[in-house]
Length: 429
Ligand SMILES: *[C@@H]1O[C@H](CO)[C@@H](O)[C@H](O)[C@H]1NC(C)=O
Ligand SMILES: *[C@@H]1O[C@H](CO)[C@@H](O)[C@H](O)[C@H]1NC(C)=O
Ligand SMILES: *[C@@H]1O[C@H](CO)[C@@H](O)[C@H](O)[C@H]1NC(C)=O
Ligand SMILES: *[C@@H]1O[C@H](CO)[C@@H](O)[C@H](O)[C@H]1NC(C)=O
Ligand SMILES: *[C@@H]1O[C@H](CO)[C@@H](O)[C@H](O)[C@H]1NC(C)=O
Ligand SMILES: *[C@@H]1O[C@H](CO)[C@@H](O)[C@H](O)[C@H]1NC(C)=O
Ligand SMILES: *[C@@H]1O[C@H](CO)[C@@H](O)[C@H](O)[C@H]1NC(C)=O
Image (cartoon, rainbow, N blue to C red; front, side, top):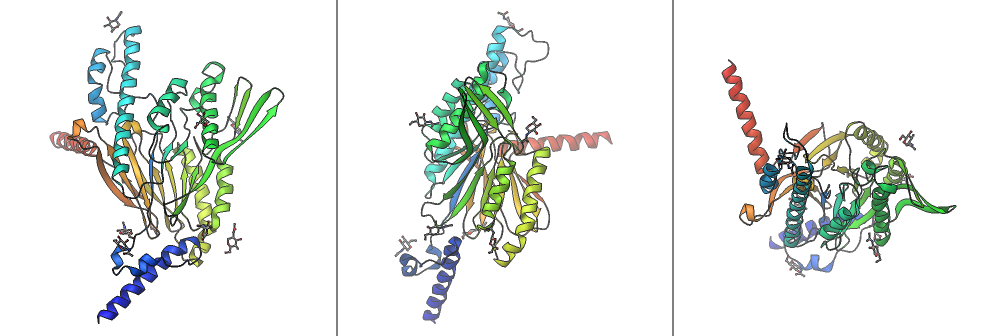
């Protein structure tokens, strides 16, 4: 009897290890320590974790619902006649004093939100046995590409973060400031810094440099694809970064440098064909993905899914593809789109001005995404993290599902509004 149990456990271990090692397409040898262990529960399941957020955006006001941040700016707002969104109250005569007050209040809120976010992420990473493979920041690193804003981004995040960073640019880094700063210096600052960043990290980005007469010309989408693995290399995923938007293109001329940025849509199309035979998850990242842009992304992924459906079926694999973005600071939600009968998550990953972020955990058997609210520890009795819902990704589906991440404060507010509405409704009768 006992021997039978042992045999059953052994077969279970063998089966699970086979599933794990098939990830690479080949059945590798089962590690000795797995065979030696006598209980199935002690098999270390390899987890590949990513942290995701957007919009560090030095310096931009906090979201209205970020109660802790609005608490910090309360005195300043009263002093400089600012409302909750840091707009001047009606009837205020705007002079230099209050204009500067608005700017300093914006900086105050942005620094608070970034500090709280950084401390929460440090605490979360510090508490994890298996460190995340990277923090993905999907654009708007700065508010306008000014040098002092980039320096602050470097100081707070880039120069000393405990795990690797995978960065993208957003509309505030270049799109918004094209033909606005002197000599296009703001856009040029961010674009040249970004090309430096990818080069320093041996990331191959879609950009070529060539001399034209006295000038230098850069051409490409700046998109890149990185294969990222868990510590022991058993679980891997492809991270694609498309920067601002699927259809964004622009030419920027600065002193002796021309940037000819093409839309990343072709890059994505080619990359999906190259990766069509992979069994690894594909994580598509970009800054903004709403309206017609979202339609364009969906159309592309939908046709890819239809082409690939038969291949996935014959390989008995579930497609593991997802799209991750930020830009709308107040949104933090997962929409599980149903494409070719499989769930394809479209995720607002959370923003710094809202003190939200997400954690994506991928194993060989399943994957989840969990929302978090970063909290100022002094205001919350030492608590730096509020864990929100956990959503299962991928697998078969029958229809679209939407899951919004809600924290304590937003839930309270929503309930309050609902109650008020109900009461108004009752008194109407
Ligand atoms: C599979 O494993 C081999 C070594 O065993 C390694 O060189 C290769 O990069 C792996 N490929 C994938 C897709 O994991
Ligand atoms: C067995 O499992 C334990 C606890 O999960 C672990 O510490 C140990 O390294 C594993 N391997 C062996 C050979 O005991
Ligand atoms: C600036 O405007 C504010 C609000 O209208 C006013 O209270 C303040 O006295 C003004 N300051 C100066 C120096 O004019
Ligand atoms: C890239 O590396 C150079 C040389 O170490 C350094 O001076 C520069 O600041 C780095 N840039 C980025 C964006 O990491
Ligand atoms: C680039 O954008 C312009 C409009 O700003 C558009 O007319 C042009 O077709 C775009 N080029 C590509 C390659 O999409
Ligand atoms: C994918 O694999 C199938 C056979 O398994 C092959 O026919 C097809 O050409 C491959 N596609 C690519 C893009 O490599
Ligand atoms: C995912 O799989 C792991 C083990 O492989 C298991 O512990 C965990 O509960 C699963 N999660 C979900 C949400 O099914």
